[in-house]
Length: 532
Image (cartoon, rainbow, N blue to C red; front, side, top):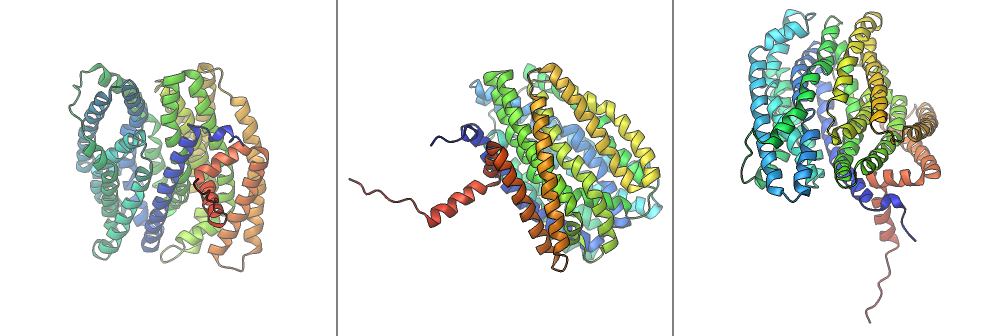
C-alpha cells in the first residue's frame, strides 16, 4: 500500500531532522532540569536570584541583538553557494563571518565588563546597595558568555546545514552538566557567585560542541570584507541589529519595572521561564530549525510556491503541537513546579506564585514563539529582514505602556502579562503583511485548523485536570505521569482521527513511529525468505 504523502521526501527528512533535534533537546532538557533543580535547592527565590537574573539581562540582550539574525542570513547564503557548486566559497564566507562575529562580540564583552556597575544602576535602580553590588560582580563575569554564545549559535546553524542536528541540539546538555559540576564545587567556596561561574563554564562547553567540528572542516581562504557577498550579508544583518536594539529592549525594561518589587518576585518570572524553556527546547527550536533549511532550499528550487508549501506544513505542525502543550502544561502547572523546584530554599508559597505565571509564560514563550519563528523565517528566506524587525520595534511601545501600568496594578503577574499582549499584536501585523506579500498564503485554512486544535486541546486539558484532582493522594511524579499520558493520548487520538497526516508527522517527529516499528519487529519479526 502506498505511504501517505506526508512521508515522501523531503517531508520524511524534515521529520527525522526534527526528531534528532528533539532527542538532542531531550538530553539538554534532562541536564538542564538537573541544573535548575540544584539552583532552586541552593538559592530558592530571593535577593541572590534576583541579582543573578538581572545580571543575565545585558549578556542576553547583546546575544539576541547581535546574533538573532545571523543564522537566518548566513544559512540561506551558505545554501545558495553550495547549491551552485561553490562549496569552497560557502566555507570561505562562513570563516569570514565567524571572525567578524567573534571580534564584535569580544569588544562588546569587554566594554560591558568594564562598566558593569553603571549598567546595573541604570537597568535596576530599585536595587539596594548589596543587591546591586552582587549583580554588577556577576555581570562582569557573565559578559564573557557573549562571544562563546555567539560562536555556538553561529556554528550550530552551519552544522544544521550540513545535515547534523543531534549534537547542536545536545550541546546545551553538555553545558548544563558543566553548570551542575561548577555549582557543586564552587557554591561552598564563593556562594552566589558560583551561579555566574557555572553559567560561563556552561556557555564555553556549549560553544565547543559545534565550533570544533566547523573549525576542523576549515576553509581554504577568507573573503575580504569588501566582497559583494559579505556586503550583502552585512546589509541583511543590519536591520536585525538596528531594530533589535529597540525590540529587545523589553528585557531591560522588564528588569527596570521589576527592580522595585519585593525580593524574590522577579525570580518568580525567572522560574516560570525555566518551565517554559523545557518546551522551547523540545518544540520551538526543533520544528523551526528543521524546517528553515528545507524552506530555503524549496525557495531556491521552486520559488514562492515551494516556500509556501514548506511554510504551511511547518505552521500546521506548529499549531497542532503548540496549542495542546500550552493548555495541558497550564493545567498541570502546580505539580510541575512542585516536582522540579519545591525543595530546600524553594518554599510551597513560591510554588503557588510561580505556577500562576505558567499559563501566561507558556502562551508567550512556547506558542507565540513557535508561530513567530515560522512566520519570521518565511520573510527571511525571501531576503526580507526589515518587516519583522520593524513590527517588533513599533510594538515595543505597546509593551512599555502595558508593563508600566500592569506592574503597578498586579505586580509581577501584570509584568508577565505585558509581553504576550505585545507579541499577539506583532503576530497579527506579520500575518497581514505576509499575506500582502504572498497572497497565496493559506491563513484561512490554518485558522480553521487552529480552532480544531484548540477544541482538542481543551478536551485534553479537562482530562489532565480530572486526572490530577482524582489522584491527589499519590505522589506528584505519578500524578504528572497519569495526567500527561491520559491527556496526550486523548489529544493524539482525536488528531489521528480527524487529521491523520498531521498526526503521523508528529509521531515521526517524536519518535513514536520508530518505537512502534522496533516493538513490532521485536514481537513479529519479518520472515526470512530462503535464497534459491
